[in-house]
Length: 322
Ligand code: UT7
Image (cartoon, rainbow, N blue to C red; front, top):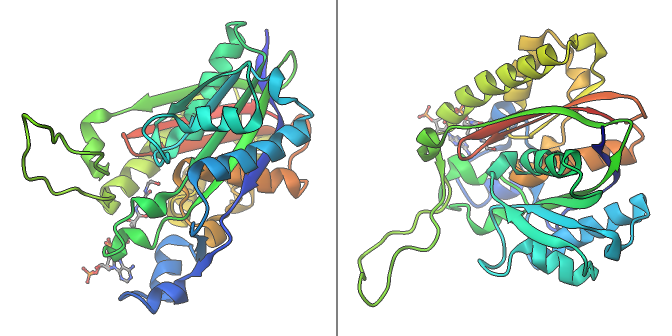
């Protein structure tokens, strides 16, 4: 049976680095609070970069590592909630920039679970025998939609992009996944799109930027991520001693520590890039994956668990052999 196997990764961060000290000059916050509550020390914020531009750069790096030519791609999936345009999709912009003229392209919105859901979608196409070469990207310019007057959220987020090329393979790759959503709890993390305002229905409307019930999302994340990892381990007859690394969405170091504790695992198996990237939503998993790959921390045959969680609410975990 064919599975989707990652053959190349790439990532990019905006040039502008913003430290906690930089933020403290502009709002009522401080480095000690941010580091102790979240693990974040700095994040990169777009000043000239765009969502599509970062996606293309990350994609080019991943394609280069994979040795895949643009015309070979059959599907481009971009996980993002911060596209530059409503139409065309970021994926279509990536397709155009790469010259991937034979690929179908579309965006996927599953917020911070976006890259994990995109991996799952890629796996479903590969298993079904429909596509053999796919590009997926997780990219966000959250700085566009963050409420910079709300210190409880704006200090959390950062911008960036990560990409992976996936190819159908008989050995390795995605072995299994679980993914879930709970739309009934969507209000815990929301951001408005354009309001209904037309010739027939004009009305006053206050547009909200990112709004989050931090503690509700925190509790949800710890409980559901732990459950989803338990489910994927049990279903595949795996013990934690067989897992090399857990590549988790980077929202908060305390969430990751709580999951590690639940599993009885050491923090060494939970690499983090929160300290220098902040929470980059759909970009966090592929950014971390690319860092690990480039640092030589991934070896053929390693058993990895990926987990994503966030807005929607959405969450899920993947069992992959590298
Ligand atoms: O990727 C999507 C998923 N998102 C998440 O996973 C986020 C999950 N939630 C969290 O990470 C945490 O809930 C936060 C980091 C957002 C907040 O941490 P917390 O420990 O839940 O803090 P809190 O909201 O209970 O706030 C504690 C105190 C409050 O002051 P009082 O009311 O106790 O006097 C806040 O006003 O900290 C205050 N506070 C701040 N102080 C300094 C809130 N933001 C700040 C700030 N600097 N930036």
